[in-house]
Amino acid sequence: MIYDLQGQANMSPVVGMLYSAVKENSHRLTCITDGMSQEEVDYKGPDNKSNSTAQLIKHITYVDLNWVYRIKEQPLPQSLSEKYGPMIDENNQLPMVKGVSLNTLMYNYEQVLNMLEAACTQLIDADLDKVVNFGHDNEKQATIRWVIWHMADHSRYHQAHINQLRKWSTLNKGGIR
Image (tube, rainbow, N blue to C red; front, side, top):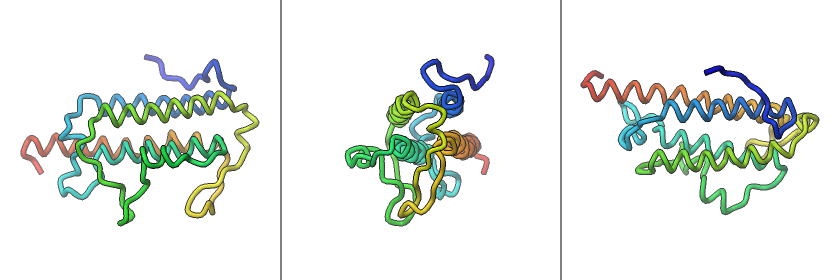
């Protein structure tokens, strides 16, 4: 397999290259979660205090959904916020997710990636300079270029956590702590 960040035929060159980084990381997420049992998807680490793979995938999905709507310069519809959210619970933690299948989590993530792809096909490279607001009370700003790059980076960051959970889970099954 040859890895490359080729643009997409239906996107402007730089937009396509940035989108390819997100798409590559989504493929990587699929690969690192392949074959996970429900027990492993719900596993919260040896101390039961870490975020589970289910929580992390749902978090990536919801964060990306919010970015997609910022790129589209539209408010996130309440129906999607209710379906994919919330971002955090009443304790400022990632919401508990337990018993949701990996297939369901990945399907939801793929739906958001499809929304991103559709949004990116509407962009031209000059649009990457547009600024969007984010954060609490929209106090932060970023270019769309940074947003798409950040989506790839954020996913990869949490994939490291998922890899660590898999290692811990394997060690715990072997009786090693």
